[in-house]
Image 1: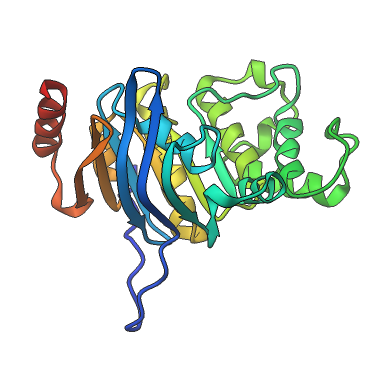
Image 2 (image 1 turned 90 degrees about the vertical axis):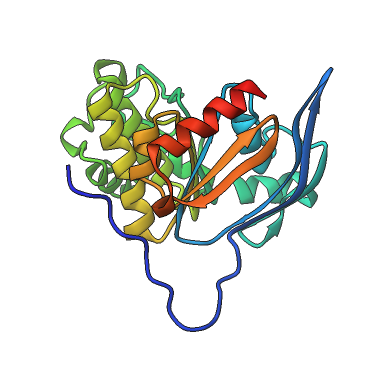
Length: 266
């Protein structure tokens, strides 16, 4: 496996506007405060790893960023939009610019890899919700094939996804996400339930998209080796608060294990 690509150098004296700015974000559930006043910013074109023990609020944070879970308070500015103030129509348009990769792929098992990827275009292109590979316009099919080629699955395009391995299914999900042409990627444990080598390949693929396509990535991963190899910055959550924020180049496995030990003991 090749070493991860280096982060892009900063050019000029101007500092780019954050692609994501979170201020005082809270989320309460009955009897529990899950997010407790989170504030942070993310620079464009970088990969940020989000770590923390189970129940620390990582997945809730990702869902709040696109309002799949409504924040209880605070502000979110992402891709130039005030997310918490978006109308339903504006929210749909905003979500079309955010690619999401879940641990569970949410693919349609009986459809081919190509048909599943084609469905990713429907977030940005008006069309019948029953699009399949035979009904989609030629330009859409060609783009879907290009996305499958990007993830190394062009030769599996016509296979049903339930005949693919777990790692291949995750690649199909990433190709489907690419059909949205996102500017920002949220990934919730994309390497979970995969063997170490396949998980590493998936993480390398996501980092490659950041480097080569100029995308921004916020990814949750419990595998410390992936956190250290495939990110530029690490944010650590503990009890709904940011307890760690450092460039990955300054981090090491021992320090991250110590963070988890302290977080679990708190």
